[in-house]
Image (cartoon, rainbow, N blue to C red; front, side, top):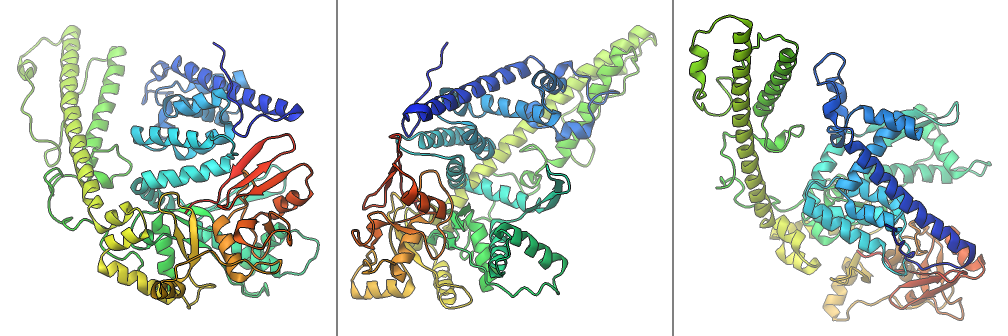
Length: 618
């Protein structure tokens, strides 16, 4: 069957560039065929052909535990076949297996889109990183479908970085509580690592930090580098040298102190304890990260109001009783299994494997099946129905020993079935408890604030204590140690588009005078005034060129779409660019940029491809 390749979202280009587009779509199609073939190959190499775990020469327990879960059913030698067939390293071959099985079983729509040429490898990486790990099948499927539809909109350019950012936002929006748990686990993994670079004599140092810490570190190093005189080094080289000076020679670097500026975007609901998305220097982060940052800056706890349901202390009819094991706290165990259950099942599994090995080897002196301990475990279920067989005297021949081994195996299977039944009941109990917890959280002040459609509704849903805390926060940060007073963005409740930018005093004046809030007036000269400059930068935030996600540099790069003085210095004629795309707008021949009054930018290339961008929503 021949696959029909979809046209590019931005349209087909003319000439050799159109040929490059066709080749790119064909590469995507072939990549999809490769993933399907590798996944089908993996299914022909089941792990049942491998030497059983625990047997001499089998894969070690440590290696098995570290193997991706998707490969538990695949022979360990499948990786080596890929190494030989495709000339890959073992690490790359195993990664290809995991990637192929993930796309086939967890992201089938993404694989279809790759085969049709709608997306390419970079888009697939973004979805694999952020959508594939979502545990709930329904949530993951809806996320995948919506993100693919967004990436394939006609007349747009969607780069992997844009799709990755969109995926982060959607996952945090629809899976906020699980994302918070993932963040807590990631915090325990933070650290600094070092690996050799491809160039001999060089190494790469990687620091895994929280987003605010990383943003502050990069901003500070950039400020130190900018303070140094021009000496032939690039800015990045100066930043690396400053890092070494600050760490290795903290007292003798002679570098002056610098002020770090972080742009934090936090909805009112997030400051009231909700789960709304936030930004730190353009990177989407959970609300809890911003609340923790503001708490550190202001010296007060920003998570005001009770985030738990009011009756959290009362027992729930669907939740396990107080004496039941805490299944939520055991992160390394399967959901619903307590420590003692996992230990019992592991012991039973090891005994059963050992029994199979000894029976196959002719050793019929089988040990009895493991039993539950006296002080923990499920209630006594009574002796098995065939217990009298064990008490009947039997001859001591090899056949009798084999018969007893079969009886032991039957009893082990019965014990295993009972244990699995108990595990199923425990899982069902945990699911009911989790559903009750979600229902209770949705009825709490934090849940009501999260569900609020706009800021006014969030304020109405918040407790009086939360509103007082928010007012105190805005008052304390308006003139404290911050580089600039907080700005309030008024947005369209449906689209998230920015309507006006103001601050607390101006908002109070507008409410008192009934004058309303409007876009800053145009400036008579070429350079926009402070209010207009701030408004356009807050609206655009990143370069408006299709596919670009660089930040708009501070202090410049706001471009007149219709050159001044033919066009006004106003919000409807200004757009933010990075330095390179600002230069390209004026210097690259054959390009056209058109800005609509609502901020929509339409870019037409010399080959006739048309792409549009809109200001990022809040």
